[in-house]
Length: 226
Length: 127
Ligand SMILES: Nc1nc2c(ncn2[C@@H]2O[C@H](COP(=O)(O)OP(=O)(O)O)[C@@H](O)[C@H]2O)c(=O)[nH]1
Ligand SMILES: [Mg+2]
Ligand SMILES: [Zn+2]
Image 1: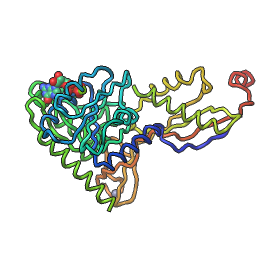
Image 2: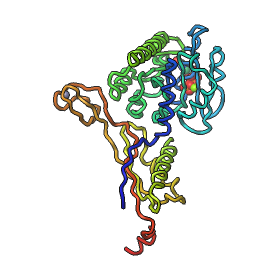
Image 3: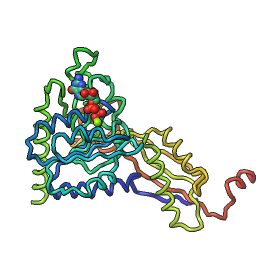
Image 4: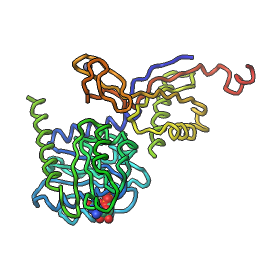
């Protein structure tokens, strides 16, 4: 018997493509956000409110993933920005190759922000790097404040938690403070925004967050190039 | 359930590695899985077995090393295992948010055996 050491990531092929995407995003100053949540937490609605709020000449685009249907793309296309649906046909997450393939006919130099809406799932998308600058996890107040403890990986890896549907707080026994504490037990110092797409409370904070993070992303690049 | 894809990637890596040693067959693969890696061990083992069945890697053993979450304290220059979300440095008690490991999903080793050794069945009966 002969034991041979292997020093390699299990998903090295995905990581390799993700790294090349990240390099392309960086080269073209595209700030890429990977939105992750359970099905129905409000990712598409948040993107609808986001696109609606942006000026018509904003340089943004959306890739939206689902197992089946073009429904989300149809919802998002109404705002006039480039939108493409990725149907995975059963796969419970997006991977870097799908992103690469669906970006093939878009010019990255025309974009400032690329939103990726992942397939609804709090577990699997966490393992697949898509080359994004930031993962954002969305948790709605109807899902239970213990979710960060049950699905630690995605809360650990996300830069921001969007606590969504806060207009429903009066109707559900959801302890938002406990949800925040749980998220920060997994991810000390995690940024958290409270948002309702119904009343639009918190949307300005989300738009500011995007702007601030994109600026920091560009400054970091300038600093490393200089 | 992404464990099927993960199991498939592991088997592909083993196949590739085994090809570099003609006349040998892989008997075991070791991987490292962090507690923050979002991998269900049972699901992974199940997928692994199903995918390997009736292939050249049938019967390949999977060894999983679980890796705990580790933080690093810059003041004391020490690394420690985090238990129960307690992020305080064991030396200076300062809360240290810097996580240095715990989300790994890595291949660790492959064990190969020369082919002309008795087959799995033959080996069992000769023992
Ligand atoms: N009350 C309320 N409902 C919301 C809010 N955001 C989304 N929803 C509803 O939640 C459902 C799922 O939203 P969707 O954006 O499709 O979730 P996705 O699966 O994460 O993309 C839809 O019926 C939305 O209208 C919100 O802020 N408040
Ligand atoms: Mg959606
Ligand atoms: Zn210390």
